[in-house]
Amino acid sequence: MTRRFVFVALLAAALALPALAGAQPANFSGKWIQDMEKSDPMGGGRGPAGPQTVTITQTATELTLERETPNGVMKTVYKLDGSPSVNPGGRGGEITSTSAWEGSKLVTKYTRTMGQNSMEVVETRSLEADGTLLLVMAMKGGPMGDTTRKTVFKKS
Image (tube, rainbow, N blue to C red; front, side, top):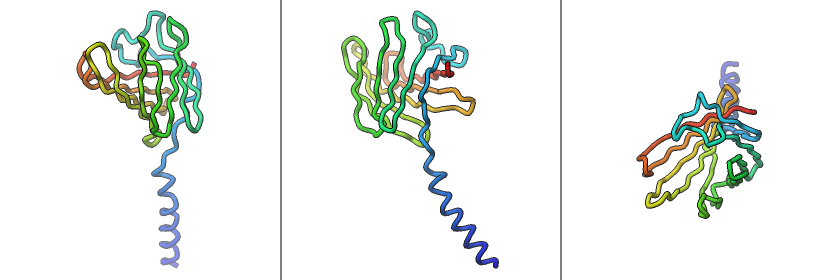
């Protein structure tokens, strides 16, 4: 009886491990508005019109962000399989990035050039327990040195 119990317990644990190890990717779909009180104030933390608003559409293969800007809607599409994505980078340039899941977090990496300076950027998106969307942007080598900025969004 004891051997059977141990065998069943070990079998159950072995079957549960892959499910625990492979956290499901988060679903970021929805319309989000920046929570100004919880976000870092770098650069004022806002555009001329106030908090950032972003609409996210997510499929199994792509994440599409549409941000409302003073110049209209800016659309960014990230492939979720680690292959390169090319999007407008401002001032007529382009940014090539890669995005991949690290557990339930989406990590996007790219290099951005501002004037004579080039910086490495890592954006990490995650859904928090309170239902907010957290964007952590780590910038290395930019004109302000190495910085990290946290932006919190709530569903609108």
